[in-house]
Length: 408
Image (spheres, helix red, strand yellow):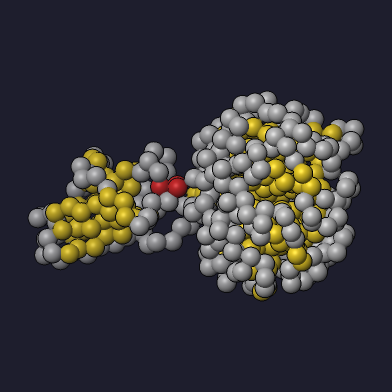
């Protein structure tokens, strides 16, 4: 049951509206995913409803496997992906149907493979990619273009596929100790960050890996990097022993600025599709918190997530849903609940709320007396305009009237 929001009108002489406001303050929820898996990477569909989570098998957890959820983490099913692998990173198409996952090494320490699924993880195939010590992977919006990077324990190269992973070829990226890669929605713009064991630089390509250039980002021990959907905005974080800061770029990595995020040992950073909302997780060797920025990194605030050894965070395209994983600690989710806004104009009430991914399935209800608790659905169907749901109804002529959003 979702949290409910109320608006009160005192009628008819004076209309006084009290609404919950437009900010979100709901907490994180622990899903029923295992708390004894060494969770390594999580990815989500565009609306956040489909989650895919991969575990790293180092002999201390309950074995490497990949799990999937179709209801934002309320329940999980183990996929048919091979177990006892050190799954390192995974990526999803926007609809959640196409997945790609890379193995750093098998249980015997041998270099790993790349696996792909075209049916939300029901079946997996290992395409013709070379075995390597894979560290990062990213996918285009349709999942057709994929990029994967080696950690430097293998050939230290970056590979790309333009046919759903059926075939792969190495790009012209330098041989390096890569930590992370990211890709724009159309698969054209790529960014890759070195872990600091190589040259410590961030590279970019604007032609699907055909050519790469070093950006002006400072030399660092980079741990994670993320692109906005259009490929213009970049956010990158380092894991400590560098300057422990988070940097952003507004020109595809051409120029960089440090943000106001606190110094920490960041393990992961991600962003909404437009790059406005940024989410960064500490590895647990700093303060162990998850921070959120809603203004392109201009300011940051710690979320209500508990202190933990966070390893990965995923974000829906509009930023209204987050999934984060830790070991130990399991997989947690967070979603914003829309707030009602009510205004009077002439003889009508205008009731509106944001149409975020987490607002899907909410119903506007009304009640004249809270003591009776006999809520009924407002008959007028909401109209969606510019991301806002709005209902226009005649102003009640007497008494009080209460409104709420009832979750699915």
